Length: 259
Image (cartoon, rainbow, N blue to C red; front, side, top):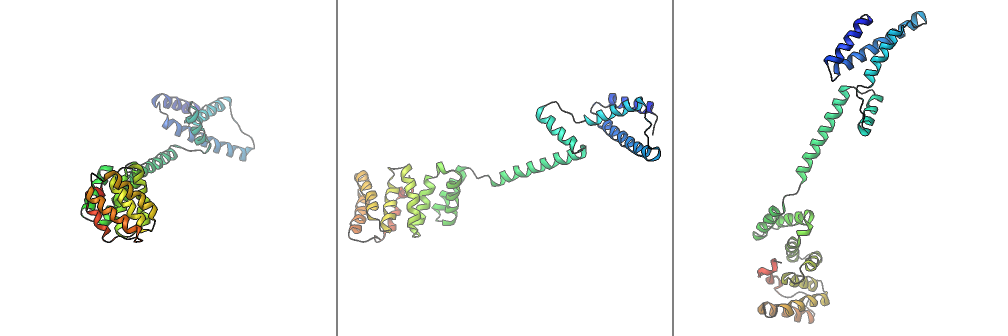
């Protein structure tokens, strides 16, 4: 090892030349390790430790620099750096921690982008195009995406899904969707007729008649021909026929697919 004076001058030079103290920290750690080795050898050989006040002062100074290398005055930052000192973390450990956090952040950001739903405008366009082209699978996919991610704007998606379910004889599921649509759009004629049909096809005559009656009452003068068709549904239902013949033809009207 170098004489004490040379080490001290080198130590002071590093403090002035390198404000960030990276090399000084390494020098401090090396000096402390050398002192520990010297201490251990002195105890083993002579059972005593020959140390002068100057050397003791120098060691304390070096130890202080090494100890407070990552010292911070803030409450949170100070606690973090105190923890790092307790576990004897060095710059390499900090670099690994920062790199790990950065990777986790990037993965999380990438996952959020991958799983983020498409905009409502794009989904509605996909839904309308697929429904117009009678692509049931794509229509249901777009409708379900709208219902899941944009429930406050999903009334028409529920209506189109219910219409598809009706034509595929899933009347109960269709009725649940149509009930939600009717709560949001109580005066829309299409959901009135569709929900009436869903109830009639399940044998729930009273609920079906409530919807049929409301449609006939509100739209008698606006859609007289359609009111006549719905009145036939009502008549057949009262006669015990739960499935009106050619009931799917009611969906040829545009308003059955609109709110």
